[in-house]
Length: 353
Image (tube, rainbow, N blue to C red; front, side, top):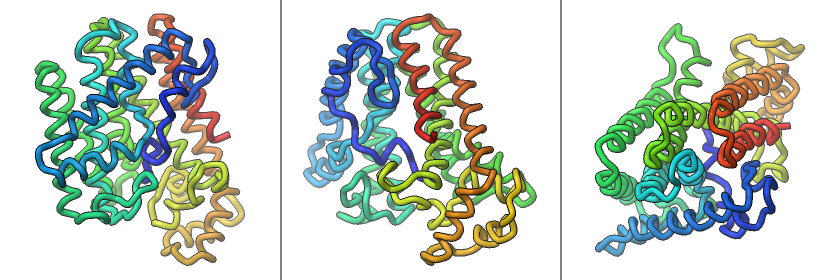
């Protein structure tokens, strides 16, 4: 399962402040002038604390820790923390450290993911495990988790508990993905549960931290948390669709990567579950059960999957998650941050159109 939040370059600081009021910025966000200026300023503070947090006494550990920080990334999770903080006091002392906590946690998982996946490239650069060793990569990920915990200690026991539970979900999701569904179980439900734990959990915590540490009312914290988890799931589902349906020039990625690697994503689960029907169902199911590293077989499977009604069902599922998130968000106070969040719901659907 590819990670939509980890692969593309992070928008520049200038992109945040350059848009006129209500222009759509990165991720379809609608940032008015004041919100854009605040985001620009606080993202700079996040970046500064992030670099400070990965600096250590050991030169190798510092170099390895900075490896992915300086490689870029969207800083999607810190952005959600900052946006959610506008439902309370965005200048509250814990907001920027919390944004750094979620990014450190995310980066730590990437080091471990690359070891498990035997990846050689991350964010356009040589992965840490390829540049150094698996051991160095694993220990660097552990170090980033430790640095996140150090920052968390100053945010109070509630924040520590929230992070611990989210981390438990991340690990559980990874284990569930590794072992697969139980015999006789529902493959699609298992897939969505893995996706919620591996991707949705930390996205949810990002919104939760921003609202909670800014002093927003408890009902707002709960709503933002729920909406952010649904947005996280929707983003991953849109990535599933784009992996199949987009051209390399459009997405910047090689089409059918998950298919080639034998990773079953939402459209494939629909095909195998018999959702929708096409004239070549039997052949497509036969191909999905094979090793598709062969270029000819891969091209055939990709073409059949693109034409299959399962793609429309996957798009309907995506719209469902995005609209559920929007329904949550529309119960929140009508402020520019709410427009930014609902813009994400629009963007996640439109990017697959």
